[in-house]
Length: 74
Image 1 (cartoon, rainbow, N blue to C red):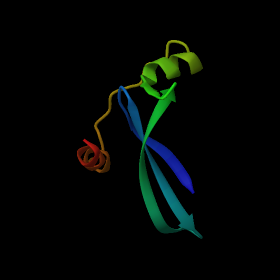
Image 2: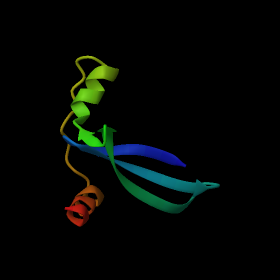
Image 3: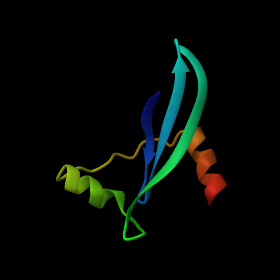
Image 4: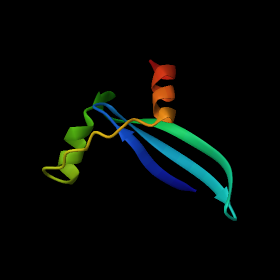
């Protein structure tokens, strides 16, 4: 299994998981992930700043798969 972050925004990041066996793709999953503190969604920038002070995530074009996920959950 391989995972990669496809997109980050204020509250959520979107992670793609790919399940491969002997180089053959068997399944993919796209997860919307939030960081919680006391049951409340926390801004990603706050968490990232604690991990790496001064870090700012870059705005890149949003992949189509992420746009489709956003439309489903909004």
